[in-house]
Amino acid sequence: AAAPPAEPMAVRARATGLWRGAHPLRPQERCAPGQQLAAGQAIGLLQVGCAYLAVTTPVAGTVQAVLVQDGARVDYGMPLLYLKATP
Image (tube, rainbow, N blue to C red; front, side):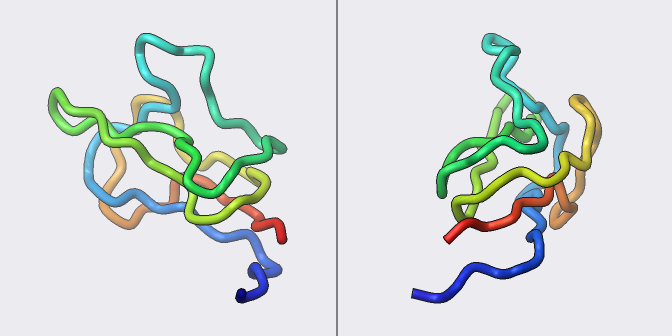
């Protein structure tokens, strides 16, 4: 297995849409700096029209910074948050 990167990595948008830090029916579920995340864990949603696409973490790690506010328009490839991978 490869060692995790020493620097925080950007988790990027895989589509263009509106960033939603939580599902409208579960507003208490938000990703915050310092939070520990598992690989594949949902960190938010991209709203594309009426559809919501889950955004997940590629690796386990700690959230370093959330870069976009809820409701902000994001483009494909735009960094959404920084994640420091854990071994």
